[in-house]
Length: 172
Ligand code: IMP
Ligand code: MG
Image (cartoon, rainbow, N blue to C red; front, side, top):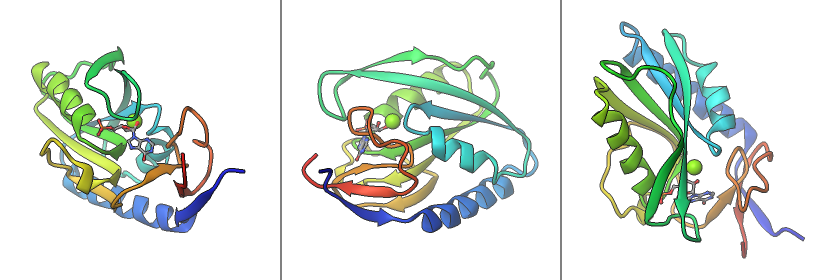
């Protein structure tokens, strides 16, 4: 049997996503925004978050693959790029979880190199204590100290993404 412990309920997620959406709407009230969801992990968060944003947005997605085992490996590569033109746009990266920060660093660079006017980040979960690369996260849903999390888009070997709430996996 899957051993898991509930750490963030559906109601808590919904409440926090509303607040994040309100903050983003306020910050970008006067300028259009390109919201880029990072697949696969952000798919549920992204769907909920954009419906809480009242300002003008465009939506696109990117996907990164990492080589090697585990959650955070050294070598990264884009397997799906945005299809929108990024040049001179304000971009918001939407990620499920920031762990070491390597994926985020890679994504940021990729968008900045192509002339984005600004790049900000919204992450549902920040595992701050595991950070290896100091990189700012502008909008954070929840800070979690440690452990492997699943649900609300987060997976363990492509499983459990569909759980409506977030669990700490015991003995993954
Ligand atoms: P980073 O490059 O080390 O920050 O890794 C970030 C990526 O690793 C996330 O986008 C997730 O796909 C994955 N990841 C890290 N921690 C977890 C976790 O606790 N559960 C599920 N996926 C995770
Ligand atoms: Mg991810």
